[in-house]
Length: 234
Length: 221
Image (cartoon, rainbow over all chains, first blue to last red; front, side, top):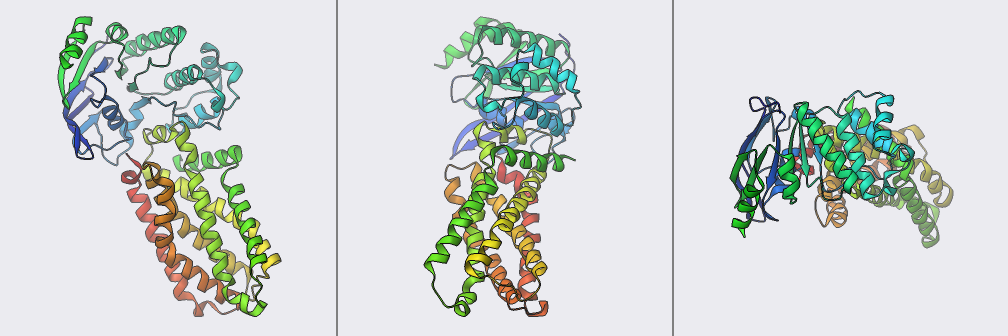
Protein backbone atom coordinates (compact mmCIF):
# COMPACT_ATOMS: atom_id res chain seq x y z
CA UNK A 1 0.00 0.00 0.00
CA UNK A 2 1.45 3.29 -1.10
CA UNK A 3 1.22 5.83 1.66
CA UNK A 4 2.79 9.26 1.76
CA UNK A 5 2.30 12.60 3.45
CA UNK A 6 -1.32 13.71 4.12
CA UNK A 7 -3.03 15.13 1.05
CA UNK A 8 -6.32 15.62 2.84
CA UNK A 9 -6.96 17.17 6.21
CA UNK A 10 -9.91 18.57 8.09
CA UNK A 11 -9.84 20.49 11.31
CA UNK A 12 -12.53 21.23 13.92
CA UNK A 13 -15.53 20.42 11.74
CA UNK A 14 -18.77 21.18 13.58
CA UNK A 15 -22.38 20.86 12.51
CA UNK A 16 -25.67 21.34 14.36
CA UNK A 17 -29.25 20.58 13.38
CA UNK A 18 -31.97 22.48 15.21
CA UNK A 19 -29.57 23.36 18.03
CA UNK A 20 -28.47 19.72 18.38
CA UNK A 21 -24.70 19.46 17.91
CA UNK A 22 -24.14 16.36 15.81
CA UNK A 23 -20.50 17.01 15.02
CA UNK A 24 -18.61 18.98 17.65
CA UNK A 25 -15.02 18.96 16.50
CA UNK A 26 -13.85 16.47 13.91
CA UNK A 27 -10.24 16.57 12.79
CA UNK A 28 -8.16 14.01 10.92
CA UNK A 29 -5.86 13.56 7.95
CA UNK A 30 -5.67 11.02 5.15
CA UNK A 31 -2.67 9.73 3.24
CA UNK A 32 -2.63 8.82 -0.46
CA UNK A 33 -3.76 5.27 -1.14
CA UNK A 34 -5.20 4.85 2.34
CA UNK A 35 -8.56 3.12 2.80
CA UNK A 36 -10.15 4.55 5.91
CA UNK A 37 -13.36 3.34 7.49
CA UNK A 38 -15.59 5.61 9.56
CA UNK A 39 -17.41 3.76 12.28
CA UNK A 40 -19.85 4.70 14.97
CA UNK A 41 -23.41 3.89 15.99
CA UNK A 42 -26.43 5.16 14.04
CA UNK A 43 -27.02 8.89 14.31
CA UNK A 44 -23.45 9.71 15.25
CA UNK A 45 -22.97 11.87 12.13
CA UNK A 46 -21.08 9.65 9.67
CA UNK A 47 -23.37 10.51 6.74
CA UNK A 48 -23.39 14.17 7.79
CA UNK A 49 -19.59 14.22 7.77
CA UNK A 50 -19.40 12.57 4.34
CA UNK A 51 -21.96 15.06 2.98
CA UNK A 52 -19.93 17.95 4.37
CA UNK A 53 -16.75 16.60 2.76
CA UNK A 54 -18.58 16.11 -0.55
CA UNK A 55 -19.79 19.72 -0.55
CA UNK A 56 -23.49 18.90 -0.22
CA UNK A 57 -23.67 20.34 3.26
CA UNK A 58 -21.82 23.31 4.71
CA UNK A 59 -20.21 22.92 8.14
CA UNK A 60 -20.99 25.47 10.87
CA UNK A 61 -17.26 25.80 11.40
CA UNK A 62 -14.02 24.12 10.53
CA UNK A 63 -11.46 24.12 7.75
CA UNK A 64 -10.14 21.57 5.34
CA UNK A 65 -7.89 21.08 2.38
CA UNK A 66 -7.62 18.49 -0.36
CA UNK A 67 -4.55 18.35 -2.53
CA UNK A 68 -3.57 21.82 -1.26
CA UNK A 69 -6.92 23.31 -2.33
CA UNK A 70 -9.25 24.79 0.28
CA UNK A 71 -12.50 23.03 1.10
CA UNK A 72 -15.78 24.48 2.44
CA UNK A 73 -15.41 27.66 0.40
CA UNK A 74 -16.98 28.77 -2.89
CA UNK A 75 -13.91 27.44 -4.70
CA UNK A 76 -15.05 24.30 -6.55
CA UNK A 77 -11.62 23.17 -7.80
CA UNK A 78 -10.93 20.71 -4.99
CA UNK A 79 -14.02 18.71 -5.95
CA UNK A 80 -12.23 17.57 -9.11
CA UNK A 81 -10.33 15.27 -6.73
CA UNK A 82 -13.51 13.90 -5.13
CA UNK A 83 -16.16 11.35 -6.01
CA UNK A 84 -19.20 10.41 -3.98
CA UNK A 85 -21.02 7.11 -3.43
CA UNK A 86 -24.17 7.83 -1.45
CA UNK A 87 -27.27 5.95 -0.28
CA UNK A 88 -29.12 7.19 -3.37
CA UNK A 89 -27.85 6.31 -6.88
CA UNK A 90 -27.15 9.97 -7.89
CA UNK A 91 -28.31 9.62 -11.50
CA UNK A 92 -30.91 11.29 -13.70
CA UNK A 93 -33.74 8.75 -13.95
CA UNK A 94 -34.91 9.74 -17.44
CA UNK A 95 -31.40 9.48 -18.91
CA UNK A 96 -29.89 6.24 -20.15
CA UNK A 97 -26.84 4.80 -18.40
CA UNK A 98 -24.64 6.07 -21.22
CA UNK A 99 -26.15 9.58 -21.07
CA UNK A 100 -25.70 9.75 -17.31
CA UNK A 101 -22.06 8.72 -17.57
CA UNK A 102 -21.38 11.12 -20.44
CA UNK A 103 -22.97 14.02 -18.55
CA UNK A 104 -21.10 13.50 -15.28
CA UNK A 105 -17.77 12.83 -17.01
CA UNK A 106 -18.18 15.97 -19.12
CA UNK A 107 -19.03 18.00 -16.03
CA UNK A 108 -15.84 16.76 -14.36
CA UNK A 109 -13.91 17.42 -17.55
CA UNK A 110 -12.80 13.77 -17.63
CA UNK A 111 -12.05 12.78 -21.21
CA UNK A 112 -13.04 9.15 -21.72
CA UNK A 113 -13.44 7.46 -25.10
CA UNK A 114 -16.65 5.64 -26.07
CA UNK A 115 -14.61 2.44 -26.43
CA UNK A 116 -13.44 2.66 -22.83
CA UNK A 117 -17.02 3.21 -21.62
CA UNK A 118 -18.20 0.22 -23.72
CA UNK A 119 -15.44 -1.89 -22.19
CA UNK A 120 -16.64 -1.08 -18.68
CA UNK A 121 -20.27 -1.77 -19.58
CA UNK A 122 -19.22 -5.24 -20.76
CA UNK A 123 -17.08 -5.81 -17.67
CA UNK A 124 -19.99 -4.99 -15.37
CA UNK A 125 -22.52 -6.84 -17.52
CA UNK A 126 -24.58 -3.73 -18.24
CA UNK A 127 -23.89 -3.49 -21.99
CA UNK A 128 -27.34 -4.83 -22.89
CA UNK A 129 -28.98 -2.13 -20.77
CA UNK A 130 -26.79 0.87 -21.59
CA UNK A 131 -29.47 2.51 -23.76
CA UNK A 132 -32.26 2.07 -21.24
CA UNK A 133 -33.27 4.85 -18.87
CA UNK A 134 -31.82 4.19 -15.43
CA UNK A 135 -35.31 4.65 -13.95
CA UNK A 136 -35.96 0.98 -14.79
CA UNK A 137 -32.65 -0.29 -13.34
CA UNK A 138 -32.63 -2.51 -10.26
CA UNK A 139 -30.72 -1.41 -7.15
CA UNK A 140 -27.87 -3.79 -8.03
CA UNK A 141 -27.63 -2.44 -11.59
CA UNK A 142 -27.49 1.11 -10.24
CA UNK A 143 -24.67 0.11 -7.89
CA UNK A 144 -22.73 -1.40 -10.80
CA UNK A 145 -23.32 1.76 -12.84
CA UNK A 146 -21.93 3.75 -9.91
CA UNK A 147 -18.84 1.51 -9.97
CA UNK A 148 -18.41 2.29 -13.68
CA UNK A 149 -18.81 6.02 -13.00
CA UNK A 150 -16.13 5.92 -10.31
CA UNK A 151 -13.83 3.74 -12.43
CA UNK A 152 -13.98 6.13 -15.38
CA UNK A 153 -13.62 9.35 -13.35
CA UNK A 154 -10.29 10.76 -12.32
CA UNK A 155 -10.14 11.40 -8.57
CA UNK A 156 -7.95 11.13 -5.51
CA UNK A 157 -10.51 10.62 -2.74
CA UNK A 158 -13.72 8.58 -2.86
CA UNK A 159 -16.32 9.27 -0.19
CA UNK A 160 -18.50 6.20 0.17
CA UNK A 161 -21.51 6.00 2.44
CA UNK A 162 -22.25 2.36 3.24
CA UNK A 163 -21.14 1.05 -0.17
CA UNK A 164 -21.88 -2.59 0.69
CA UNK A 165 -25.49 -2.05 1.76
CA UNK A 166 -27.32 -3.03 -1.46
CA UNK A 167 -24.73 -5.34 -3.04
CA UNK A 168 -25.14 -9.05 -3.69
CA UNK A 169 -22.20 -11.48 -3.61
CA UNK A 170 -20.99 -10.70 -7.13
CA UNK A 171 -21.35 -6.97 -6.49
CA UNK A 172 -19.33 -7.32 -3.29
CA UNK A 173 -16.60 -9.16 -5.21
CA UNK A 174 -16.46 -6.35 -7.75
CA UNK A 175 -16.24 -3.80 -4.95
CA UNK A 176 -13.46 -5.83 -3.25
CA UNK A 177 -11.52 -5.75 -6.49
CA UNK A 178 -12.08 -2.00 -6.92
CA UNK A 179 -10.89 -1.27 -3.38
CA UNK A 180 -7.68 -3.18 -4.09
CA UNK A 181 -7.15 -1.52 -7.46
CA UNK A 182 -7.83 1.99 -6.22
CA UNK A 183 -5.58 1.51 -3.20
CA UNK A 184 -2.76 0.27 -5.42
CA UNK A 185 -3.24 3.26 -7.71
CA UNK A 186 -2.70 5.57 -4.74
CA UNK A 187 -6.33 6.67 -4.56
CA UNK A 188 -7.79 7.09 -1.08
CA UNK A 189 -11.16 5.92 0.13
CA UNK A 190 -13.08 7.18 3.12
CA UNK A 191 -16.09 4.97 3.69
CA UNK A 192 -18.65 4.21 6.33
CA UNK A 193 -20.16 0.82 7.00
CA UNK A 194 -21.83 -1.25 9.67
CA UNK A 195 -20.32 -4.43 8.21
CA UNK A 196 -17.25 -4.64 10.44
CA UNK A 197 -15.99 -7.95 9.00
CA UNK A 198 -15.90 -6.40 5.54
CA UNK A 199 -14.39 -3.21 6.94
CA UNK A 200 -11.62 -5.10 8.72
CA UNK A 201 -10.62 -6.79 5.45
CA UNK A 202 -10.74 -3.62 3.36
CA UNK A 203 -9.42 -0.83 5.54
CA UNK A 204 -5.94 0.35 6.37
CA UNK A 205 -7.20 2.61 9.11
CA UNK A 206 -10.27 3.12 11.28
CA UNK A 207 -11.75 6.35 12.58
CA UNK A 208 -14.40 6.00 15.26
CA UNK A 209 -16.77 8.85 15.91
CA UNK A 210 -18.60 9.29 19.20
CA UNK A 211 -20.09 12.34 20.93
CA UNK A 212 -19.33 14.45 17.87
CA UNK A 213 -15.58 13.80 18.09
CA UNK A 214 -12.99 11.38 16.79
CA UNK A 215 -12.51 8.93 19.68
CA UNK A 216 -10.69 6.16 17.85
CA UNK A 217 -7.95 6.39 15.27
CA UNK A 218 -5.91 3.28 14.49
CA UNK A 219 -3.93 1.94 11.56
CA UNK A 220 -4.28 -1.68 10.36
CA UNK A 221 -7.32 -2.29 12.57
CA UNK A 222 -8.34 -5.73 13.82
CA UNK A 223 -11.88 -6.94 14.34
CA UNK A 224 -11.45 -6.48 18.09
CA UNK A 225 -10.76 -2.77 17.60
CA UNK A 226 -14.14 -2.37 15.91
CA UNK A 227 -16.12 -4.42 18.40
CA UNK A 228 -14.45 -2.89 21.45
CA UNK A 229 -15.20 0.63 20.21
CA UNK A 230 -18.77 -0.09 19.14
CA UNK A 231 -19.67 -2.11 22.24
CA UNK A 232 -18.21 0.42 24.63
CA UNK A 233 -20.57 2.92 23.08
CA UNK A 234 -23.73 1.01 23.92
CA UNK B 1 -17.99 25.06 -20.97
CA UNK B 2 -19.59 23.59 -17.82
CA UNK B 3 -22.46 26.05 -18.20
CA UNK B 4 -23.12 24.72 -21.70
CA UNK B 5 -23.06 21.14 -20.38
CA UNK B 6 -25.58 22.09 -17.70
CA UNK B 7 -27.90 23.91 -20.13
CA UNK B 8 -27.71 20.99 -22.57
CA UNK B 9 -28.60 18.64 -19.72
CA UNK B 10 -31.73 20.67 -18.93
CA UNK B 11 -32.85 20.51 -22.58
CA UNK B 12 -32.07 16.83 -22.79
CA UNK B 13 -34.04 16.26 -19.60
CA UNK B 14 -36.99 18.21 -20.99
CA UNK B 15 -36.95 16.32 -24.30
CA UNK B 16 -36.90 13.02 -22.40
CA UNK B 17 -39.36 13.74 -19.62
CA UNK B 18 -41.53 16.35 -21.43
CA UNK B 19 -42.50 17.82 -18.09
CA UNK B 20 -42.10 21.59 -18.14
CA UNK B 21 -43.13 23.02 -21.51
CA UNK B 22 -46.08 20.69 -22.01
CA UNK B 23 -47.48 21.13 -18.50
CA UNK B 24 -47.03 24.91 -18.71
CA UNK B 25 -48.71 25.06 -22.13
CA UNK B 26 -51.62 22.81 -21.15
CA UNK B 27 -52.22 24.89 -18.02
CA UNK B 28 -52.14 28.12 -20.07
CA UNK B 29 -54.62 26.75 -22.59
CA UNK B 30 -56.99 25.68 -19.81
CA UNK B 31 -56.81 29.12 -18.16
CA UNK B 32 -57.35 30.95 -21.46
CA UNK B 33 -60.40 28.83 -22.25
CA UNK B 34 -61.79 29.45 -18.75
CA UNK B 35 -61.26 33.19 -19.16
CA UNK B 36 -62.92 33.21 -22.56
CA UNK B 37 -66.01 31.48 -21.17
CA UNK B 38 -66.10 33.26 -17.82
CA UNK B 39 -65.72 36.89 -18.98
CA UNK B 40 -68.34 38.36 -21.14
CA UNK B 41 -67.34 42.01 -21.08
CA UNK B 42 -67.48 44.39 -24.01
CA UNK B 43 -64.20 44.28 -25.99
CA UNK B 44 -63.25 47.85 -25.08
CA UNK B 45 -63.67 47.15 -21.36
CA UNK B 46 -62.02 43.76 -21.57
CA UNK B 47 -58.91 45.13 -23.27
CA UNK B 48 -58.27 47.29 -20.21
CA UNK B 49 -57.61 44.36 -17.94
CA UNK B 50 -56.45 41.80 -20.54
CA UNK B 51 -52.71 42.63 -20.05
CA UNK B 52 -53.11 41.92 -16.34
CA UNK B 53 -54.84 38.61 -17.07
CA UNK B 54 -52.07 37.64 -19.48
CA UNK B 55 -49.30 38.22 -16.93
CA UNK B 56 -51.25 36.64 -14.07
CA UNK B 57 -51.63 33.57 -16.28
CA UNK B 58 -47.90 33.52 -17.01
CA UNK B 59 -47.10 33.94 -13.32
CA UNK B 60 -49.16 30.84 -12.45
CA UNK B 61 -47.68 29.01 -15.43
CA UNK B 62 -44.18 29.80 -14.23
CA UNK B 63 -44.96 28.24 -10.83
CA UNK B 64 -45.95 25.00 -12.59
CA UNK B 65 -42.70 24.99 -14.54
CA UNK B 66 -40.58 25.95 -11.53
CA UNK B 67 -41.99 23.11 -9.46
CA UNK B 68 -40.87 20.74 -12.23
CA UNK B 69 -37.48 22.37 -12.76
CA UNK B 70 -35.85 20.58 -9.82
CA UNK B 71 -37.98 17.43 -9.76
CA UNK B 72 -35.52 15.37 -11.83
CA UNK B 73 -32.77 16.31 -9.38
CA UNK B 74 -34.71 14.84 -6.47
CA UNK B 75 -35.78 11.39 -7.66
CA UNK B 76 -32.37 9.71 -7.43
CA UNK B 77 -30.70 12.65 -5.70
CA UNK B 78 -28.73 13.58 -8.82
CA UNK B 79 -28.55 17.04 -7.26
CA UNK B 80 -26.04 15.75 -4.70
CA UNK B 81 -23.90 14.48 -7.59
CA UNK B 82 -24.11 17.96 -9.15
CA UNK B 83 -23.14 19.64 -5.88
CA UNK B 84 -20.20 17.29 -5.35
CA UNK B 85 -18.93 17.91 -8.91
CA UNK B 86 -16.21 20.46 -9.61
CA UNK B 87 -18.69 23.00 -10.90
CA UNK B 88 -19.43 26.26 -9.15
CA UNK B 89 -22.91 26.76 -7.76
CA UNK B 90 -23.41 29.93 -9.79
CA UNK B 91 -23.13 27.90 -13.00
CA UNK B 92 -25.78 25.45 -11.74
CA UNK B 93 -28.05 28.44 -11.11
CA UNK B 94 -27.34 30.02 -14.51
CA UNK B 95 -27.86 26.70 -16.31
CA UNK B 96 -31.27 26.27 -14.72
CA UNK B 97 -32.14 29.95 -15.29
CA UNK B 98 -31.27 29.92 -19.01
CA UNK B 99 -33.14 26.65 -19.62
CA UNK B 100 -36.23 27.72 -17.68
CA UNK B 101 -36.27 31.10 -19.43
CA UNK B 102 -36.35 29.36 -22.81
CA UNK B 103 -39.01 26.85 -21.65
CA UNK B 104 -41.19 29.71 -20.42
CA UNK B 105 -40.77 31.61 -23.70
CA UNK B 106 -41.68 28.47 -25.63
CA UNK B 107 -44.83 27.94 -23.57
CA UNK B 108 -45.77 31.60 -24.07
CA UNK B 109 -45.05 31.38 -27.79
CA UNK B 110 -47.57 28.57 -27.98
CA UNK B 111 -50.24 30.32 -25.91
CA UNK B 112 -50.09 33.97 -26.99
CA UNK B 113 -51.89 33.10 -30.28
CA UNK B 114 -54.70 31.69 -28.13
CA UNK B 115 -54.99 34.99 -26.25
CA UNK B 116 -55.35 36.62 -29.68
CA UNK B 117 -57.84 34.02 -30.89
CA UNK B 118 -60.07 33.60 -27.85
CA UNK B 119 -59.68 36.90 -25.99
CA UNK B 120 -59.03 39.27 -28.89
CA UNK B 121 -55.67 40.39 -27.58
CA UNK B 122 -54.44 43.07 -29.98
CA UNK B 123 -51.19 44.96 -30.26
CA UNK B 124 -51.52 48.37 -31.91
CA UNK B 125 -47.76 48.90 -31.75
CA UNK B 126 -45.02 46.59 -32.96
CA UNK B 127 -45.18 42.88 -32.03
CA UNK B 128 -41.41 42.67 -31.70
CA UNK B 129 -41.55 45.20 -28.86
CA UNK B 130 -44.00 42.93 -27.03
CA UNK B 131 -41.74 39.92 -27.69
CA UNK B 132 -38.76 41.83 -26.25
CA UNK B 133 -40.90 42.70 -23.23
CA UNK B 134 -41.75 39.02 -22.77
CA UNK B 135 -38.07 38.08 -22.94
CA UNK B 136 -37.17 40.67 -20.34
CA UNK B 137 -40.05 39.84 -18.00
CA UNK B 138 -39.41 36.10 -18.31
CA UNK B 139 -35.77 36.61 -17.38
CA UNK B 140 -36.86 38.42 -14.21
CA UNK B 141 -39.41 35.68 -13.39
CA UNK B 142 -36.83 32.94 -14.06
CA UNK B 143 -34.09 34.66 -12.05
CA UNK B 144 -36.24 34.94 -8.93
CA UNK B 145 -38.05 31.66 -9.54
CA UNK B 146 -34.98 29.43 -9.88
CA UNK B 147 -33.47 30.97 -6.77
CA UNK B 148 -36.60 30.21 -4.74
CA UNK B 149 -36.99 26.73 -6.25
CA UNK B 150 -33.39 26.01 -5.23
CA UNK B 151 -34.28 27.02 -1.67
CA UNK B 152 -37.37 24.82 -1.78
CA UNK B 153 -35.41 21.77 -2.87
CA UNK B 154 -33.82 21.29 0.52
CA UNK B 155 -36.93 21.98 2.59
CA UNK B 156 -39.89 19.74 3.30
CA UNK B 157 -42.29 22.58 2.44
CA UNK B 158 -40.66 23.25 -0.93
CA UNK B 159 -43.80 23.05 -3.04
CA UNK B 160 -45.56 25.55 -0.79
CA UNK B 161 -42.52 27.78 -0.46
CA UNK B 162 -42.29 28.49 -4.21
CA UNK B 163 -45.68 30.23 -4.68
CA UNK B 164 -45.68 31.78 -1.19
CA UNK B 165 -42.35 33.54 -1.77
CA UNK B 166 -42.60 33.97 -5.53
CA UNK B 167 -45.89 35.89 -5.75
CA UNK B 168 -44.98 38.79 -3.42
CA UNK B 169 -41.42 38.98 -4.75
CA UNK B 170 -42.61 39.11 -8.35
CA UNK B 171 -45.39 41.67 -7.78
CA UNK B 172 -43.28 44.58 -9.09
CA UNK B 173 -42.35 42.51 -12.17
CA UNK B 174 -45.96 41.60 -12.95
CA UNK B 175 -47.11 45.20 -12.42
CA UNK B 176 -44.32 46.53 -14.67
CA UNK B 177 -45.03 43.91 -17.34
CA UNK B 178 -48.77 44.65 -17.23
CA UNK B 179 -48.29 48.42 -17.53
CA UNK B 180 -45.79 47.96 -20.36
CA UNK B 181 -48.09 45.52 -22.19
CA UNK B 182 -50.99 47.99 -21.92
CA UNK B 183 -48.80 50.73 -23.36
CA UNK B 184 -47.55 48.50 -26.20
CA UNK B 185 -51.11 47.33 -26.93
CA UNK B 186 -52.17 50.97 -27.27
CA UNK B 187 -49.20 51.69 -29.53
CA UNK B 188 -47.61 54.21 -27.15
CA UNK B 189 -43.93 55.11 -27.66
CA UNK B 190 -41.25 53.69 -25.34
CA UNK B 191 -40.86 57.06 -23.62
CA UNK B 192 -44.36 56.57 -22.13
CA UNK B 193 -43.46 53.33 -20.35
CA UNK B 194 -39.69 53.37 -20.01
CA UNK B 195 -40.03 53.69 -16.23
CA UNK B 196 -41.59 50.21 -16.10
CA UNK B 197 -38.96 48.81 -18.44
CA UNK B 198 -36.24 50.19 -16.14
CA UNK B 199 -37.88 48.37 -13.21
CA UNK B 200 -37.83 45.11 -15.21
CA UNK B 201 -34.18 45.58 -16.20
CA UNK B 202 -33.16 46.43 -12.62
CA UNK B 203 -35.05 43.45 -11.26
CA UNK B 204 -33.55 41.09 -13.83
CA UNK B 205 -29.98 42.26 -13.22
CA UNK B 206 -30.19 42.41 -9.43
CA UNK B 207 -31.89 39.05 -8.90
CA UNK B 208 -29.73 37.24 -11.45
CA UNK B 209 -26.64 38.52 -9.65
CA UNK B 210 -28.03 37.69 -6.21
CA UNK B 211 -28.98 34.20 -7.41
CA UNK B 212 -25.59 33.63 -9.03
CA UNK B 213 -23.67 34.75 -5.96
CA UNK B 214 -25.80 33.11 -3.28
CA UNK B 215 -26.85 29.86 -4.91
CA UNK B 216 -24.10 28.00 -3.05
CA UNK B 217 -25.53 28.89 0.33
CA UNK B 218 -29.08 28.38 -0.94
CA UNK B 219 -28.56 24.95 -2.47
CA UNK B 220 -26.44 23.27 0.19
CA UNK B 221 -28.19 21.48 3.04
